[in-house]
Image (cartoon, rainbow, N blue to C red):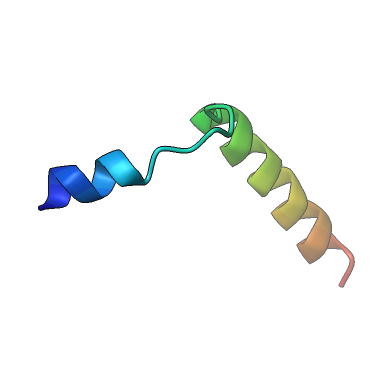
Length: 36
């Protein structure tokens, strides 16, 4: 059942690079918390 569910959840969006997304998140967090 799980495999069938995942087959239906295929996305057309490009695969995101985990490292790139993490770096962006850290940059946003740093920017957010240094404005205090």
